[in-house]
Length: 469
Image (cartoon, one colour):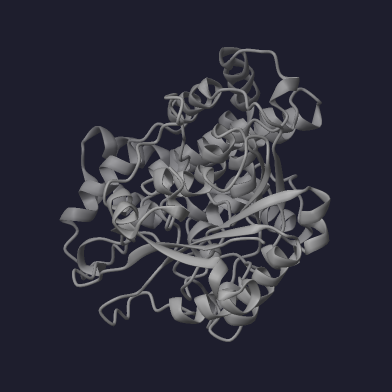
């Protein structure tokens, strides 16, 4: 169906009944979402792909800007398109490389072989790290065995960290010193990556140790030439998926862990702690490796570009013969680096010095030097969108843009640019006759729940399509 030429009634009916996640020839898209992610397009993917399918031909080159968890990129490859997934996040780029199979043709082994090698390589770092955190892991294990959520929370509050060294024995202090040195030098040489920072908060102590041991194994396997880029991205993505599943935070993000101060009723938090700390990192990651191997090998070669979107120019799009650009930018002041800094650190494999605010670390345990997107700035958003629209137009590319409006005067997620302002930009660049807006059948789902939720919020999701001449 050519949606662009359908009657308004037909378009309304299509958006009221989103297409299933299947290709026209009836095959499953087999889309994976490795981690919980703000505004991911898994629910609206059918409608997005239906709109795009009418604008392209099989084999066309397309750009997926702000690729996130790679859900849309996966759908585009399933349509037989040549995809360039673009994101500034190291974690997002690892996920895209793994799910899109970039470099997979070089690997002929099985998932069992990959998992076995990974297990063997992580055994030594795991043993070394558990010996350093042994007393605290012991407390955690006792609490888990007793199904005592409050004791579990208490163990997490007491475990020494690089930012809270009270009670640390000499071997743990040496580990913290090595971590600090690696953080200052930007080095992967530290045995530990996350356990000196997030053990007992976002992750359980044993969970953080397991993540570190598995990540250290990946680094060493790459250095020894045992695995290539795609294999390492598979292991990293699997580890990201397990870490996201285990995250002890509202919405499974990393803006801040659950607050568990003594003034609160901890019944809910105790139950969440028991559930989240019970996630087996190693088993969960290995299961995700097998899921990644079940993805079909792509028909078209794809690529992953780690870079800020505003660094892409028209010449770069022209050099790749890009026919269409899909973009799902952030629209609020919520910087994504605040929500995914733990995952980015994990993907990069290098510790970062912690941000100090008013003499203390932040509640989210943020690192220094987080990326700040111009699309999340009231002052910078408009010129950023103007530059994006002009770049795509100058390259002769059709632009498909996802946007969620903010209705009912919601103050929870104020948009940095309104839909009217956005349309005005694309009218001026592409011409008003070339631009259309389609509302999807469902609204943007709130990320938080419970006390943080806003029942009155109604944020309809739309597609803005600017057709190339």
